Length: 111
Length: 118
Image (cartoon, rainbow over all chains, first blue to last red; front, side):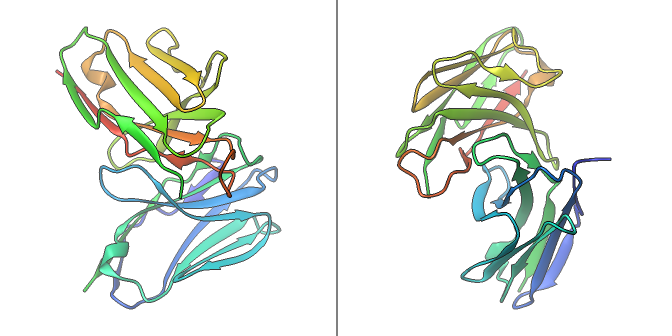
């Protein structure tokens, strides 16, 4: 069993839809949770960074962490075609430590 | 956010040659840099972790003599693929962290280097 599970999709939604992306994990030591967006042939770009449980909002993006269920989510409101990318969840026991990534979910937002 | 650059962005080389890839943190000091490789449609695979001024820590299964990592300063790390073979063709991505001068202590990624070995 992988430490971090993420549905690879692909996920296709119409423009304006609310997108929900999720990851589950098994290592209870994870304290820091991140979401990265990666466009084709580019490096990952940090979208959201959360410490421990709770919600965090930044513009159209909301990250949720439920440590009791070992479950994290990323919501994208009013999705745009420019949101089409691969979304990677990542987590770590420490702020500077190595990250454990999910497989990535391929998202396509069509006009 | 923090800026991490990589050079070159793309390199094509002949089998048996060595290739050096540079990773620079442009606006912050990175005490730790990470090197990943990524195959098409797959997630990132951590190769090694390097701390400034000390030897890199390699992940299991990664040949340290083949993938030489140097982290000589707080803003520069290099990955040298020695005696490259076609199976080394991949997308290599570095990341940097350390928090000095940054608001968020996490990893910031470079744009990646696509290596093709003929």
